[in-house]
Length: 281
Image 1 (cartoon, helix red, strand yellow):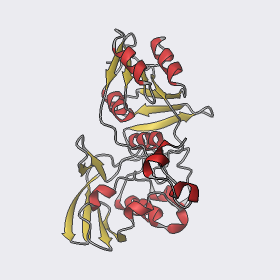
Image 2: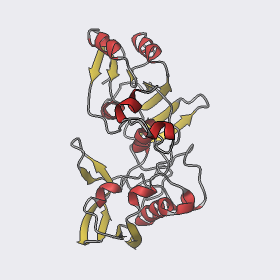
Image 3: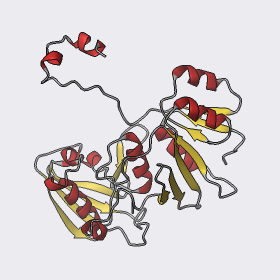
Image 4: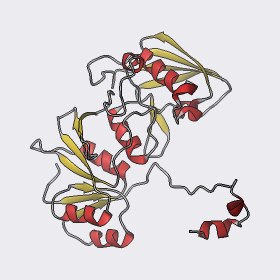
């Protein structure tokens, strides 16, 4: 149970979402979650920013997931390797009902991955699965993936949320109106970026509120306007929060990464030694 008098701070969003999904409340008041930024899209075929990726993982189910040690494990399906270039996935019973009531089948899996593989759709995830040569539906529970070349890590690439085939065909706006089979479903996405989700197991509401400034986010937490916060919290503020009686901090390994990119085609950049390039503003 989440005690509103005991405000909770979670350092990584991935840990925060797991914490929310595991807690319950006696009333039906929304758990208020302070985010650094709003999601860009709720369509898993196009989500690349961290917030979009993590929230779509709550709304959708995928064939494969990862455990706490970042090893791929079955989610919607188990698999077997029929040959060096052929994998068969068999759907289980869990997560087979979309939020609009239709049953998830192998046709939905094929439609989702066919869309991502189609060049004209420009999905940013196409490169991660371009090893796929073809996809064959055996029956409503079974689907085969034929590869261009052997890839022992292939099952771990099938982490894209599955969408309903009929809605894909009708160009449904999944970016704003997601329809998945995950543990939560969208209730409202206001124009100011705040997101209201409902957990299906107990109808618990989850309110994701965008508060860009980390100091303001902390103040809202301490005033009781937020229950959980996440994002770019300054290290000194984190140390201060650890000493407060009314806050609880959880730390966990994240599943995203930060990087710096340099345009090496620019002569001004390509001529710099690596250390000097990094030190440039």
